[in-house]
Amino acid sequence: MLQAIEAEVSKQGIIKFCEPLQLERGYRAIVTLVEPIESSDEPLPSDEDLEMAYRNANHETDSTWECAIADGLSDEAW
Image (tube, rainbow, N blue to C red; front, side, top):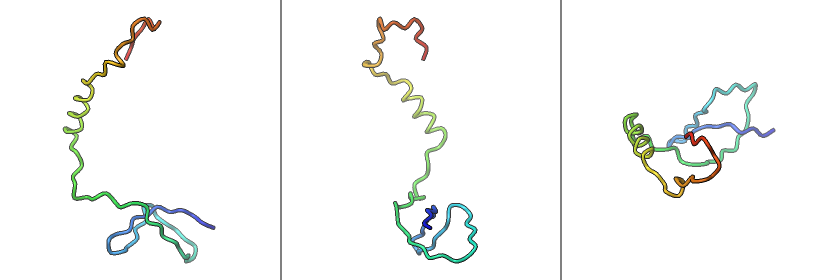
């Protein structure tokens, strides 16, 4: 029986499962490295930065999508 279990592997080769794992007996395993873990050296954007980026993007318009003339809709609610 094959079962996929998500885990992280440290630089030292230590495997840390993402969820608790309860086994009734020992098993052999094949480990497939999928992608590197994001570096924790880079801080995540603050809430203020995310809000500012959202507000800036919200003010941008694309003239291609702003031409709803005579489309048959009586109520243009966004």
